[in-house]
Image (cartoon, rainbow, N blue to C red; front, top):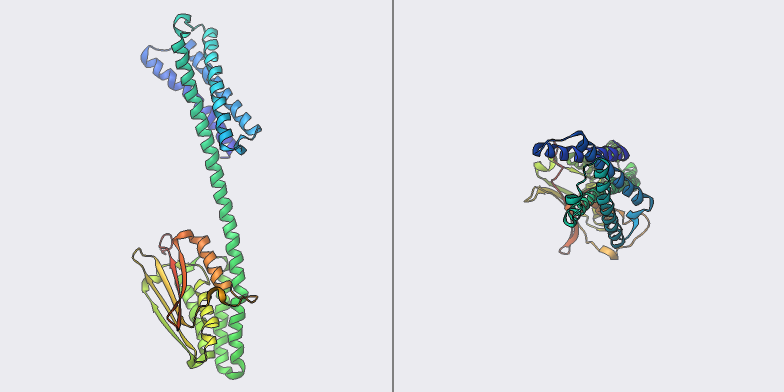
Length: 349
């Protein structure tokens, strides 16, 4: 149901309900007559028309764009004026249906009571109308923000793909002249990696096991290239395979470990991938590699520096503050990258 139709359903239904409820309680007290039915339905019609006029005024004069102080004054003034007009309308309706008792119905206290009652009804209507407007706007903003986030995620994934493919091709190229037999095996692994990079392009998160398999293929390529200069260690808790993570996240961290860590060391080094669950069943992923993290002092050549920034941005877009990313030096020989993936909505059925 669109917003305009919903408004009319609530507006008609609400004031019709107002008349029926009043008539019901009156029937319990002393019974009702056709004249009283006409009087209450006339009053409900006046409420209907006056509140619709208020809505028209609000929309035409764009009150929602006013500062809060100005909007409050406008609304309060309108509600008071409508309440006064409604009090007079009740007198006119009673006169029209010959139900007015001048002695009892026009006393100051009775008039004040009618004014106060009208003020409450108009205030309630305004509160519901503004609440609906702001909730609707809030939902629209969430949908808009979700769309923007989706576009950003696609952009970030597209940013990774060319860089990732370039690194993998470099690994195979180094083997073609050195060892053609190993190069054949490497090409098979490369095809697996490329297939993966194409398949995951449309997914916000994927099973951890799929990402890990691709990381293993990539590291197998690097093991062929580095030979004894690279040692890889896996410590994966079985429960980790029940989680989903952003695609190419772990892959990017491992690539950085090779490019900025192992490849810069004459003797090579180690890459250790460890995954386990925390106290609150959040998934913790550690990548520990030989090297030193230089932070902002590292050179920022074109095409470099995307990995860490990209990973942090994607974690923030998908999980907000529930995820975390840390990278730090462990002593003088190792760099540790630590990622926390929240449990909520990630466990596979």
